[in-house]
Amino acid sequence: MYFYDIRYMFVTTKVVIIYSLSIFRVFSLCKFITNNMKSFLYIIAFAASVLIVFLSNAKGVPQAVTKAPGESGFDCGACHSGGNFNTSITLHVKDSSGNIVTQYEPDKTYQLEVMVTGQNNAKSYGFQMVALSDSDNKDQGRWTNLGTNVKTQNMLQRKYILQSNPRQDGIFTATWQAPPTDLGSVSFYFSGLAVNLNGSNTGDSPVSSKLTLPSSTISSLSDFHLNVVKIFPNPARNIIYISSSENVQPLGIFNSQGQKMSVNLTDPEKGIDISALPAGLYFLQHQGVFPHTVQTRSFIKD
Image (cartoon, rainbow, N blue to C red; front, side, top):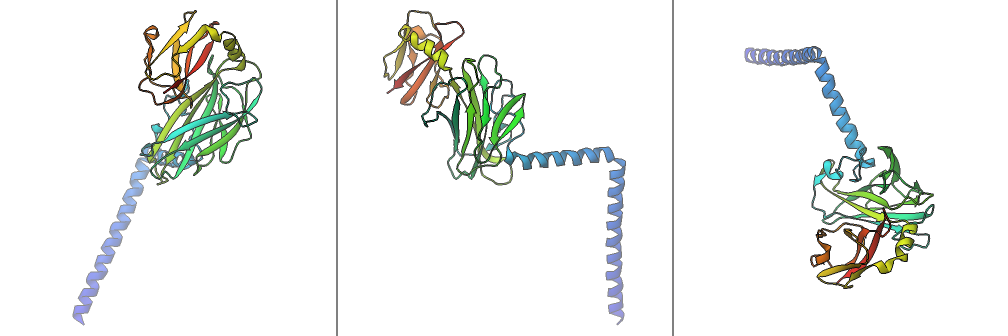
């Protein structure tokens, strides 16, 4: 009986000591918080803001990340990275008949379709896009008939469209009404993200691109002088040349998805080397024969 009494006293004493230490730790923590209340509140506020941003990103990142002029220059990769989904993004601008267009008419409406795709079992996709005039980088057009999981958001005095929730098929649609008057070329800047839905921003793959539509007015003026500028040979395999009665400067070569190709244009009189480009349809943009205009000529790479 004495042995059990001693053991009981030992256990009771241990419990009392542990309980006392717990009270002391709580008291010490309360005292630390009281003495460092300002720092503690900063920590809580920072943690809360991180949590809010993390939870809201699924409904569209609250920053402009299309790499358009006037933004930070970053796409979704500023926060999301580490994925191996080989993400790609395309934009199709279609008229009322469903035909893909390469120019716009003032005040006409077009159906836009953004497609974000990924490999290696990407779980879902998001996007962001804005339309700006090339002349002054101002917001142009009006967004209507937003598709499933698409919303608008005002940022940088511009109206962006982006996902309200991710989509597993990566297809986002909206109607864009062109500016009521001819404002020259309009560029669509857009970015996409393939995610693994692991609850963090790691293991995701971003992508961004751009598509420029000239106005039909400028295109008509260009068509009037098509004989002024020619690309030959067409189709071509290695080198293309520009034949022109005017002194024009090439500005860039773009694929059919509006992506600018890495091609050396420093000395076009000696020819432009396109041997590294994949086979397909391409567009050469150059200074127009009219002041402050841009013309586009197409060619095929064998």
